[in-house]
Length: 270
Length: 146
Image (cartoon, rainbow over all chains, first blue to last red; front, side, top):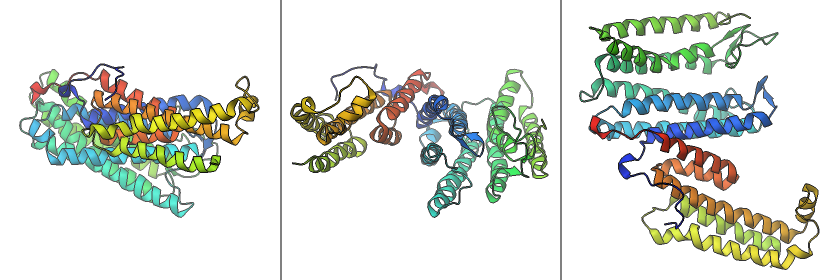
């Protein structure tokens, strides 16, 4: 179409999957948040306005890269099937809307989550941020089930168990933790006085904060597959059993951190 | 033809180009000339006419921010500046769309990136180029696994 050839064409066979493209967009939004940071000293509830878009963009890179790595190992029948393509499209739409609204609100120095100040903000919080987040989390479980059911997937036994357990646990634990968080008025349990926080993550080091449990629940989807992969590499005889036990332990740890926050205690007191 | 009237014409013209660029199927090659050739040419003509007729008699200049602000106090020059945005943003949008096509980025994902270029030109270019860059860094998909 254009006479200008500025870049090498990728052959059709090398076209990235939608999941890899979504990973790339999340990486681009990470860059956007980083170039924003030095120029904007405004705060929302004591946190730089760009911090939340940055954290979410990084999370989306981890989420979609993990899903893309797994999808690349599925059989063509599952990869091109309606279920996974539909799931990916829904998750991608949810990410674009979530990040779009989050960046827009941050640029206006207004909260995106827990914002009931106007009917518009309430609708956006409940429908875009809420429904979108639930769909994203359910999508993770769909991939977990697909991995369990796809007999032709190019996955070693431990890795297959790790992905299935990790993805399904991620979904269930996140629904519990984030679901609880969404029914309260914010991510704190208690009222910070000194407002001391852990570096970078910004979790309260003074009162209960539901975000550490949210972090753990979401990253079961990386932790357990990595464990499964290591077990396979080490030549474990029954990796499935070890992964299941580790999954139970991981869930217990997440719920303990969750309970600690609900009791109003910080993860680490500074 | 007041600046206000021309402004009211230039906006939907650019908008038509964006709608075609974002929504129209690429296989209709002729339609591709709307955002790539026709609309940019019309906007370029309007810009040229405005600049030749008004730029050199307007107060202000490019040497300081205050002078640029003064330049834009002449409505026709302000309009020319706006048309410049419209024309170049659309052309850059088409260029970015073509690049993302060649890198294999799905159209549904190109749409929000192109909307960002439409609204905030360079911010969208940053997102588009970074997206394309990451996609090109990815290892080849191994179909052998299937």
